[in-house]
Length: 114
Length: 115
Image 1 (tube, rainbow over the protein chains, first blue to last red):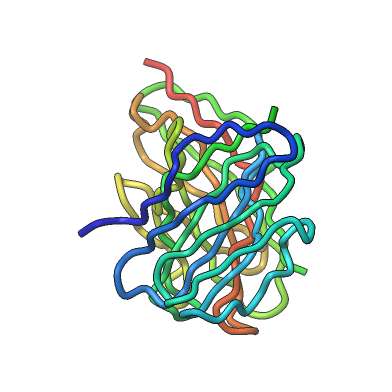
Image 2 (cartoon, chains in turn yellow, red):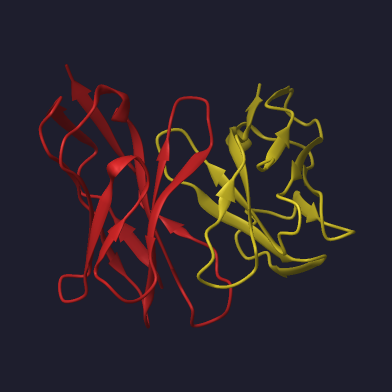
């Protein structure tokens, strides 16, 4: 079956621009996670949804970051007024919904802010 | 707070030799432990996980890992390395204490298998 997909795969933004990153999870997966991976580092948690409810957004680095999953399926991560330090790979993962379930990752969106 | 340590940034091994990629963790409560592999310009691919039960876990592509509670370790192993195993490997931990929690990752270990 289809895995997690993300679009765009690459995004170049000028500092100050707004960007929107999309994630299509595996069909039927209840849980959806966003992670940020800086160059040479492991992924770091940003936010988590269970269906349409955002249960944890403690990892969002600033109020310029906003995520939504209005119908409990597709999710969008929006970054307003991008800064150079936002340059990273943004990974989306989905899982069936239990604590021990495996998270399956998409290919990521590489964001470069100039 | 949960944490994962991967003490080696780089591991080099000759093709056909056994490989080990080290991981230690710190959590409150019982851990769920995962290994993922990342190839260039691709997302993370799941290799294996430990939830409960047998301490030796077998996963994809001939990889296995051993959970050691006393040493709080979860080292990744393979009896005979292939050149195609060369990639970036991440260990991750979560816990059941507060429901479906996010993963906490180590910094990664780059494995290079030399022909």
